[in-house]
Picture 1: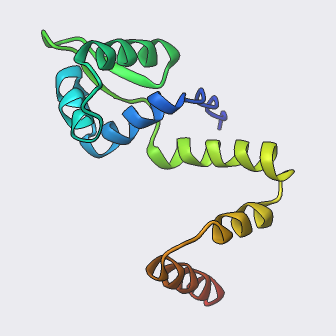
Picture 2: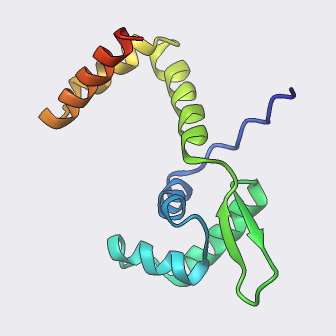
Length: 128
């Protein structure tokens, strides 16, 4: 089986847009803009449209041109892109050490609920 190419690394603005698109599955630029302005009212429709066009060119989004308004969707699943970004961060900032990355994340502060969930995941992992 051929290994799929590593997806390009999104910029912070592109990652913000992907965070909007992943739950939607796909959306027109207008629909994506409606979601983004809920958190960032200063973002214009033209900015969202241009960013989606750039992301399509980079291979971060796929585009359905069969309708009058083009519909965009993430080209890569959320988990896949996050895993690639995490691996890159681990290599660049933590000398490849998953332990160092996890300890840094834990030291940066997690909620009691998150801690309990992590402990449950670790315990369940021991049962396998």
